[in-house]
Image (cartoon, rainbow, N blue to C red; front, side, top):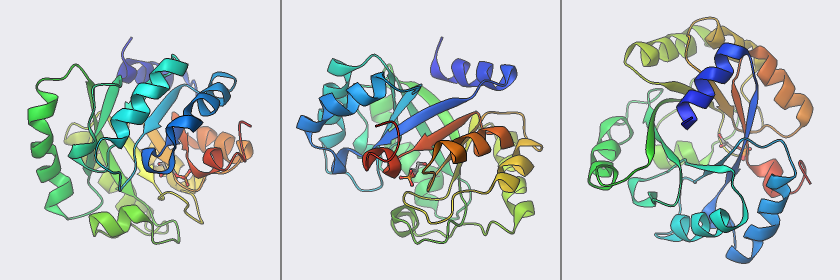
Length: 235
Ligand code: 1GP
């Protein structure tokens, strides 16, 4: 089963999945074995690999090392088309539909094509929606777009429904790495009630309690980055 099938089946069956996010730029190769051992001992379904700013080749170096130490699937979560590597199972082809910067609506995707056409990576079209997490995250800085305020549930849901109608396979509600305020359960639930594709939620989620809350609100997959990195969860 490919990754999208796993997400769609989980959504249909009401199963809840968890992914850890590894930022190649913040990870030393020597740390990968212990990171993977934590992953192997926790209920982790996928490893997302990526960050807004990653040095060239670092993603591939870390991906290769991860593959030596775990069989958990790697899903690329690239900040830029230059971060792509074949040492992974899939890539989220992010379409930043909450913003109006053409670089992240179409230009990056076009630049990725020469690599993707020669690659066996599974490509998952992802409607990426920045929701205000009360923090100016690097995603906001790098993409030069603004996040939609959490109070504006109508704009968030309309953006997500538009994403679904435009053919995105999954939606990703992102408060940004290290966000003070994760995406609220009412926002997740409003989106859940408006679309029928799997919902991924990440940014500022730091506890098992919060993971459960966001799952219960309708997310199929919850992504944990900073809390995992700081060893505050899945120790
Ligand atoms: C993944 O950006 C998030 O969507 C990760 O955020 O680092 O705050 O967990 P955290």
